[in-house]
Amino acid sequence: MINLAVRLETWDHPFRHFRGAGLLSARHLADLGATAPDEGLFRRIDTSTGEVRRRYRSSVLPVSDNRTGITPDEIPLAAPWRELVTDLLSDEFTGWLRRETGVDTTGLHRRAEIYHHYDGDFEDLSVGKQHKRLSFALHTNEHWPADGGGEQECWSGPDRSAGPVSTMLPTGGTAWLYSPSPSSWHQMAPVSAGRGLVRRWVTMAFFE
Image 1: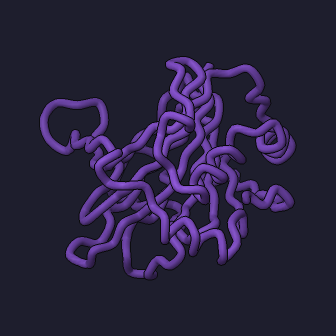
Image 2: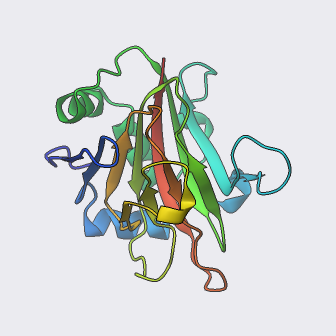
């Protein structure tokens, strides 16, 4: 399902990250949208209040973790989602990551998750988990309005007065990748509220 012929763009400002488009076809996006996992499978997380390391609101469904033993076989996924996760766990995908980013993820702790973000859901400014060697996120919405919020933002630092250096809409079939560092400041803007939007993406994280 994932188009591994895609070549990623390398961005070196404000920190090194990678972007790609066209990883999923229009047909695959439509199939994924029509067969999204049941909301009852997701765990709701809300750290938007209180004393916490990072504030965010999201719903997450872990689908594979080679440390805890979670496998896609345990999750009631429809065929298109099972195919997508299978691609993410393949040797071909690992090889593509290494070729496009220069990061070797072979043998690392590997975790795949599906995320849903609803009205006002967000991920606050952070540099990311520093023991993560590579993070991959693939947007799966067939259609996303330009004013729907949920943009991926790259920042030059924790000072919010300057605003983000660059933004990336959660357009279906686009991917965002980075290796955390002390300068990898990023956040996800809030999803526009009151419109019934659900921002869907699948992630792969590789940990030291």
